[in-house]
Image (cartoon, rainbow, N blue to C red; front, side, top):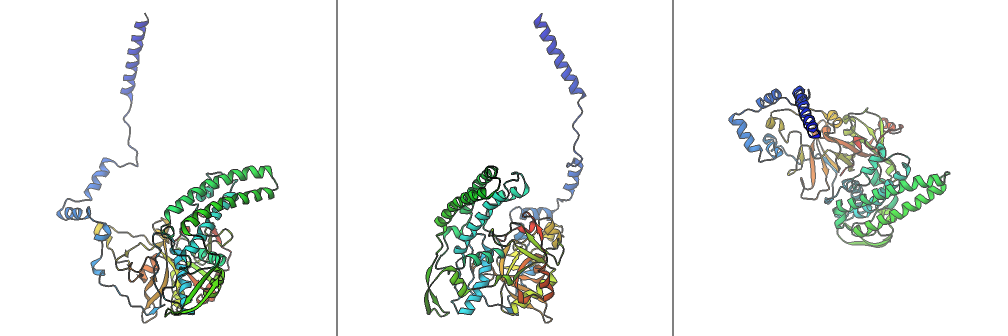
Length: 481
């Protein structure tokens, strides 16, 4: 009896399943998907002509950039400049993101060489300042973990911090704050090491350690502020714990970069190589003698067409030192920025400058020109976004800092082209420099730092505005590498 029942039940189930299958409707395609008809239309756009086949056969084996080189523009390279600041030996940041540091220090270096008649190859130690940059950024992150301990891990600010605990990129404010705090030393007193020239490995290890320590500080802060509601004792315990963590970071940096000198003896030579003086300095004493600068008289201006012009903006956490200043800038149209740059160059003063360096760059010549590559003819389409649209869609932004040192003016005083001293070595570009047409300058230049004396009074007065604070994840935060 049981066997008959089981058999009947099995037959009934199979029959019911079959009926359900018969009633099941075919799955309908989403209205947003690629349909067969759409696919046919797309295929029609790629012809089977001999020209299409020949082009395909070429392009599958070559980079579009190489194939898009504009032959008509190839002979228009010109290295003449009507106004140029005489630059010295070209530096090389190697495989690191320290362009911001090299650029800022090159501005000071050029002034120091002229004022003190130092050899042309004199350099300040980038390794010295980078050591403290990494230590200060570590402190900035750990203190931010304490400051935001009440916020959940999925809070946007906390998430951003954990995604960006440290990096080797930066901007001019970092140069100013670090030098004002730690001074400078010559490059032969603290030379480059493998890990200052190749920063990724040690930076990744420090970032891993910082994330671990940051989580621990958040847990400790939550426990301590419950135990000590008034906050003073909790803060003392947290600062002591943070100092222990930073001691580990200091050790990691000292092992891979060398320990910065507290005092050193240095032979000063003139531009003929003759020893002028042998003296003992602290880093701050050396800075005050050879490169003392009032950084409060340097101002950053920016061209960001996605935001209102003639307003001051500041970006949260965009600093290198916790007790330093965030990056702050006045947003200006290009027609206001160019005359100030020209005035600085005419007065033999280089500038910190940043741009979207990879766009339309001929790496062999070191020429940045909107006409270097003809992608439109190659692909049979246009790429028509303007600067505002490119910034808004994350297609363009400031990526690299260099030293603006030359401009070529026409008979009416209008810029034809510009030149920057780069930090990618003497063999890159044109004698270590990059040349850009004025059209390229207008489209892909973003930031420049100017001394107060080159800024007209009406623009200088705008700098005193209360800044509009932008979050750390704003697209303009992107540090120069």
